[in-house]
Image 1: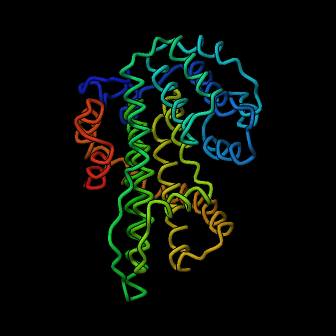
Image 2: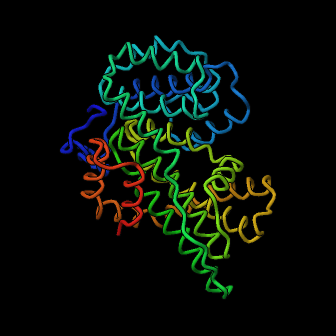
Length: 337
């Protein structure tokens, strides 16, 4: 399945019944994860913060036997050898998309990361349309956060109830988008989740009568260690690991959105003066809480995905064909019933 999937390919159901998940071999999945790490470490400056971000993104992944998160991140890899191990079109699509996303974690890839991407493109003869499509996804993702005007909720009890309702709504929606099983569409929907999280952040502030900005949302998400690029890149690979499926991305999307909801509550209650370190601790605690909460609402997430599967497939096809922008895509998915 190529990155330029035909509309009829989008949303295909796997034989294992995992909500449309497609899988790659365990060997190719492991090689892809190693290639992702090689891109992350390419510039030789693998900071503690970058490592922590990847550790967190991989923390709940069911890795192959004898492979740990630590051993995976500590390894020294030959990108060219790994590229040769990844042979199936599905695995290559997932790996290329994930590596490209990771390389753009700092907006502008390092020269070393770019060199690895170019070697991947050459070895796999990646068509120009695939490179252009993913480039468009990442470029549009920078400017797709939208906000609403602040309308304060005066009654404290009503405000708390409405904020909690918003956080749960966005968490379920984020989990739903995580179930998208197609490589390129998976990246699009995971990037849409980032914007939905920023919108949730803004909506929570609205209940307090505060107006957010795109930059404020980004600073807070980055400050608490949300690690969106690493999460998206890992989601884009791990959801295709045999026996694992897209439920991984659904769970991590739900948990991170839930956690950011708890951060938003504290941030706006403090009038935007909450300590960043404290917010980071709230985020970490919130993710653990969010994973448990996901189990309570897992059926709701799956039901929402099943009810909107056809519409999501149509949106995927429209985006891939260039008929809609990422902003259009996000505005439509936030209205899913």
